[in-house]
Image 1 (cartoon, one colour):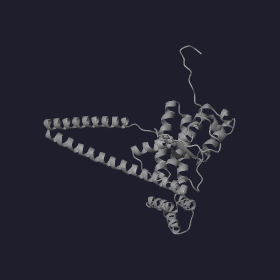
Image 2 (cartoon, one colour):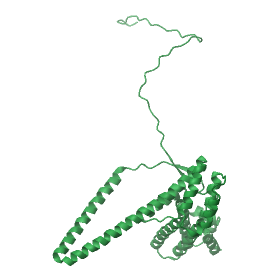
Image 3 (spheres, one colour):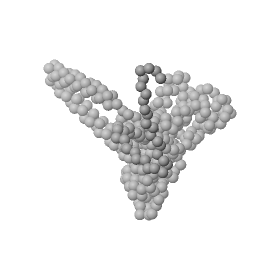
Image 4 (cartoon, one colour):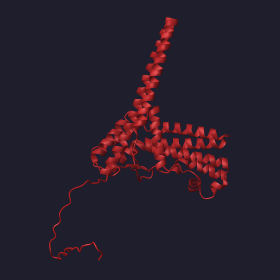
Length: 341
């Protein structure tokens, strides 16, 4: 033992026997950690598989910046127009009145454009609500919700005389006892099957046209410009087929949704593997380079058209078979195969 240290005694507490009751003192509640589950948005892919996608968190600073810049630009334009009209009145009164009349016409045209944009956005949101209501009714087996979806879809196409027979058959089966899938599938068959054929024909025609033009064009910039032009026209055509009337803002909204759907389903991966999948192994290697570019551009247009169809369609695919790439690009691929032989 080292000098300066005193001996110390230790009390050893014996372990309680196995049959003895042990009293524990609860700990005081401290700061607790909560696990917050990140919400996910369920997106239906083209093959019907639900794909969870984390929602994007939007920062308010971007919207605030755009609003401030837009306000400044509007003030600048307004002051410039006011000074110009004042100068015209000083130079010649009749020029000032002409400028005021032109300003009134411009304001009237702007009001008409705003009304058309709002009407297009309202119609697109109505289509989206119909599709979401149908998905909810199918997932929860809600018979009342399914009847409401069918009635809303029939009213949505009330102005189309070509669908009057289908609406009459739906009204005749309104009081029948049907399953949720059968009721929504009946509305899908009676009202959307013909529109699906029109959309498929439009996609096939656009893909064939893009393939022919890009295979013959001498410049790559011409290929890119025509592919973009064809995609814009195809998206507007499909939206009009299903009852949408998108303006500029509505078109941008639809294009964003179609590209997002295309990215989720992997549709942008149109390359050698896709050509080998549809054409068969080895055929892509035997066709000419320019024809191969045309086929790839046509396939990419067809994939974009299929994504646009899924976005613009007011109901999910229930009883009808969703179109595949071979359904809309079959003629294009057969022509490429014949050319390779």
